[in-house]
Length: 386
Image (cartoon, rainbow, N blue to C red; front, side):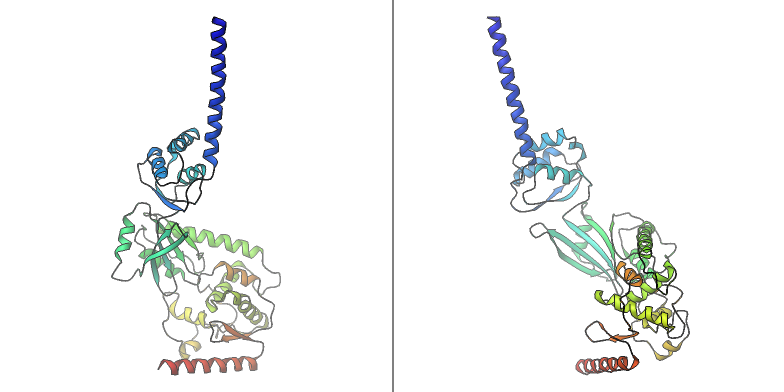
């Protein structure tokens, strides 16, 4: 009798273990399997929330098949206490494993609202955007100049939301003074800028911000990135260039940056200046003259006067030989690369061609024809606008 009971108990135990093992295997398959979500959604995890609430919300929204398995998996992987507050993108068909990783990893919001401060050459623009989970594209809901007196209500609303992301974008060709002015105007930042960084030493790029970040710290991040770019590009330079240091490369790159906004022209523009340097010709580039007038503090806002073209300043390349003493703006990576790897041409002249680009020439005679064409285009535009 006792032997029979023991045998039955052992059998039940074995069956139970098999069932439990099967349950674990099934649970693991559910955890890693493609989820039921038919279209991407934005999951908002509020501060103070927990895995129980989040799992139930996900189940209610049809993003997971079982809130219980989700919670058990989070506990089993020791991630229940790593839940981050923020807005997180849950993609179509995301597995429970992927969702748990998304909401417990960096804590950086991957959807929701974003405020971008763009420091450009002529203006400092604020854009308020929101990610549309259906298209995975940001939709602009407000845009304004930070110097405007009237600020859209949407900006204030998003500023009050704890999970709103912030970033600052620095355009290629802005001066260090313009960047400093832009950062001073960005309300969520703190601290005063005691010293404006050297011209050319701020990397045009996009930088994540957080309310309360110090302006000097943000500037340092820009300097660190630009220094890394300078070091890497200088190491990759061609061996027969008429520039002898990273500093000269940076100056030349800044001139290239200011002379063209057309990406595929940078190599040709670089070749013109390299050819002129090699031949002992003056660079004769208007942006350097403008920098001598403004010192990089804002834009000129008008055409250059003849007297300014003749006036001797350290940056007037119609008067001085070779490169000016400092960069005239902060060049982007592409302009740095063009400075050390110009196209191989015989061009020594270029002028606007009316399309936003330039017409290049090897001889003065050819250049004069291009200039005449450009003046005809200018005259037609002026007559049509009057």
